[in-house]
Length: 185
Image (tube, rainbow, N blue to C red):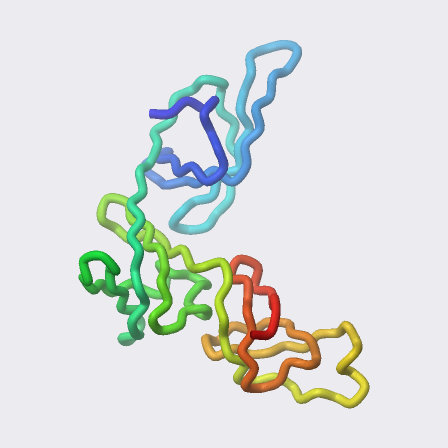
């Protein structure tokens, strides 16, 4: 059990038999009445975000998550085969457990698998990945110095807005958290 006074961003809680991650929290001490903690919680399984208010000092069950360093090997049907880098044990991870991160996966990429009670609840990808541009519009004369962007499809399936000078075959670095182009490699 953990007190609401000890909340911090990223903490995982178990409330009503569901896992919630603390996105934001604010301790409020009004002039009259008792103090309370306003929070934004994200459901770990569904991604739903809700606001919840707790009394100051209230006890909440803390969920302990196991993290395992895994390496993505290959895709098998709808599952992705991952190998534990310490034990070399291989497991299949469903696309739904990975979520939108599927479009950034590359073979031999290391990821963090999040598990609770032996069940896979999520996958943390690296913050930045390098992917090849497989389809984008060609440069137009005069547009290369303009600060505009164009859509580009990457080899994992992600679509990112890139500057006009990026062409098919270029390898670019993308931020997996925001789906934004960072630079050309």
